[in-house]
Length: 145
Length: 219
Image 1 (cartoon, rainbow over the protein chains, first blue to last red):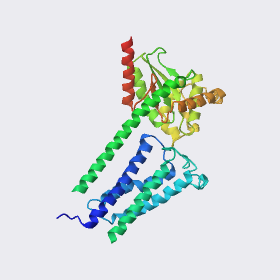
Image 2: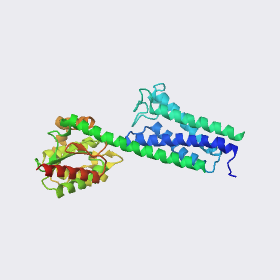
Image 3: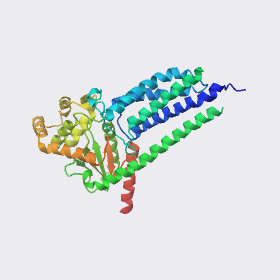
Image 4: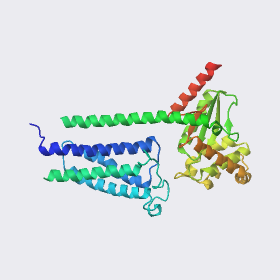
């Protein structure tokens, strides 16, 4: 018999999916920055600081499955989500740029990319962090049952 | 066991997608910047730009340079080496992309030195001494002067010449051309109008060799 239990079968795919989202986001950020040569603004850097480690932490929790990975990944995801939401507000002009720390270098309000006419980098970031955060919460409740 | 396969498979898939994305993007970009050059031929070479080597050379390298840029400093001997190993066959034109803070003032120093016929000496002296005057990604004009001593320059005249609106216009024009040609980093090279496919001395050498071969074949 394998060690695989019911929890493992239902929770593993969720941790895995969180890892996939974090990895795709990380590769995307590296592509935008290193390949396309776009300079990340300050808020982007803080979001990277939260996103990049998730790739390693979540992967470490997959083999063997350790649901306590949620404890370590959740703070990063939550802080990343907060910064991403703030960044989105700045880029949509709801919060004014003067309140942000980005007075020098690349302004956070500048929209470098608009895919399909509406999709911006901050939106993608909010979506990724929100999905990971939601997934981690779901894992927590599922595993504690 | 199956989970491990899924994980490794996904990781490999993502890595492949990433690598494909890079190569696709790069090939598109090279094509795009080559197009930009054909559309902006006049932006590539201006009459005001300093030029070295045989005017009728079959291969023409245009280098966009920032005197305060570390990579430009590292690249410079290499460019000279390529020219030395193909005498009379290569012409070099320097354009400016002074991205570092204060670098535009150093460009004016060089251009004012050109008026006294000491351009290349000054450029080389300043590149050699670059770590002493370009600190923290900014050019410090006040630290530049000691390194120009011994070149036989008339410094008071040079400082006067730096104020001329002609030089300001030259820097302005180069910066506009930088935009038109989508130069994002320095040094950027165009060999007979062809941009570097990838950054690196070997890629420059290959591009030059290509163009030399083409010129040899047509002769």
